[in-house]
Length: 254
Image (cartoon, rainbow, N blue to C red):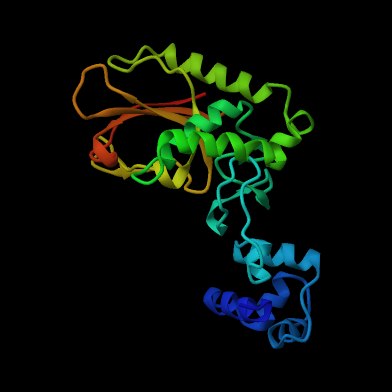
């Protein structure tokens, strides 16, 4: 699909007239018309504005001429998986799991490989094959090639360690000791909890990346503990398979 067709489709889907879109990206209606007729293409700055308005990548606006991958974990990047800077602007080099609010969430390649391999193994791709593939792929990606330049000298790891200590200090009955926290995107872990007043409430933002882990209950059975945290809160819950029947154990502001 060409850029002109992409813009027409996104504008129509969003319900904007050409004039309304023009106002949002600080151009004239005639400029939008020329884009949609294929006479011109938005410049780089305008593409960034359009990317923000439509919540899609610049790659998508250009007709997806290339398959983007996360430059930390190698995951193919779709629009809803692209990371964000602190100000909300997209960072098309990384996925939400590896880069969140201006912060790189992984500083240990082996730890990242362990996390990725869990989701890659299937009947046709063994753990050994997945691990070998990741060990070959990751060193070729920009983040790991430029790690000394891009890393934060371990500051984020110190923050994660502090969170782990705070969670373990809660001494929640039946919950094993937390050893590590992984990056988790809100939309995949945003469970609805029933409060004593019978209201259902969700505490997370689907678009935000949190730190968390799933732990098997020391009581046995098929219920697990779920831990989620960031700089503002710690949340602990239990739930059954596939997140069924979630129960809030604790929500504490930090």
